Image (cartoon, rainbow, N blue to C red; front, side, top):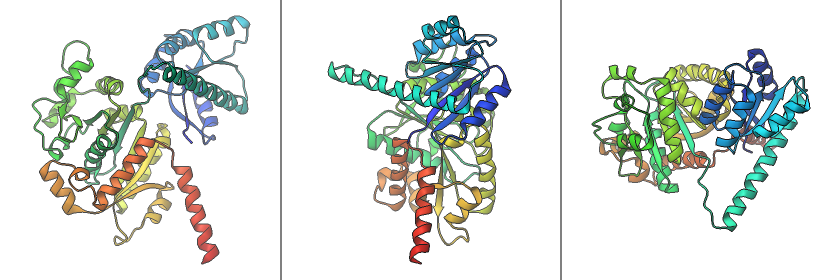
Length: 408
């Protein structure tokens, strides 16, 4: 079941933390971010596309009523629930006129909060379903409102991030026939261009120096088309140029791409930095890739803890690359050490991978029947469906253990 994505907006950090702590106990609710005022809330909604916003009223810079009105007008798929100490009818009327779906008076119980979120989300889904049915009845074709931003991240170099990024992007085009952009955010030593055998004349470093406001026409002029159908935004051509690219640049570029592409795949360097964190904030899914060695397992455990503190663990899917039973560590060992289940495994096939890189053609195209290609195809299906899997994997694992004990 897809989780309800919630954004918490309140100027008091302790209040945000208390609400976050309550909602963490709910398996079908995911807190995707926080904001301290109405202006931040609008930016966060643009970046994160939450299902529900919990909005305080009295905040600095921009109050909750003003930001609710802007969110309701510009992001009709996001429902706003006002939370306030003011229970008078006047405040309720202002909130409803601004577009709020519900109004909760502080203090409220955990059950009241959770029930309100779920009820509001259910009503919104029914409303959107009726609108979609109306559009189909009268021949309207609304634009797909759920583009996907997928960040591929790893805690160590050489684990296969770029290999997974280019092949997943190519497989997405092949399976869906939709628009796919591949952004190389390894700003110092990005290899996407090499993996796809293209020679960029300009990169993201030059794009962010363009004068005036960025728009899709300008961004498109920097994208390099590949024979797979993927369009590539290359990394800077020299390591020192990476300093030209700021987190705000990343947010702006990804926002534009998400509005015009169905899938945006992001390749990243193997460490946390501001530009990576911006990409993670905007991502619908995070593919966390690792290999079966102790240093990587140690780094992965720390990374999962950090992703949890940043509200990203719920959208993270763990991929085990070069999986083999001959390395002294097996998949169960990894899952037990991390307390996190593996979504998919990719077998080792060094010869095919190197050959595909040297030719600049992803192996999912050049050799679609290979085991490694089939593994990437399964990962691509997971990305397309965008379903939560940790609970399902845990239940499946428990069933296997039960029947294993039962039948010896």
